[in-house]
Length: 120
Image 1 (tube, one colour):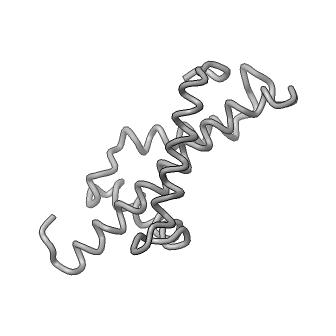
Image 2 (cartoon, rainbow, N blue to C red):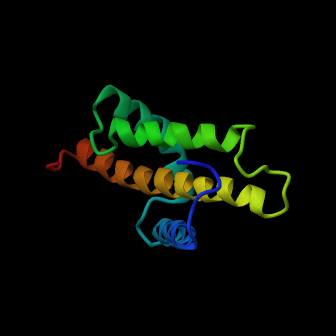
């Protein structure tokens, strides 16, 4: 992914995905935001160990690259340019947060089933 490249369709898709995660977090019976945030270290370590197979190493790598992309001081579109400079970082941030929160909700369901002995 090259900074500064992205269509309005891609940005709209990331915003829609973030909104779907927001709705999922607020759905009755669904794990709340703080439960999902607290589950992130367990989910990542479980994925690295190979216990939680629903989060593949490729997606973990993409998430790590997204974090590097956001904190990187080198940009194709410099951040000091008003609005335009931060939109690419914000798009990646939206993808990262929606991916992490959505996946952590699925992880909590997987963890609950594993603890209660339900068939996976």
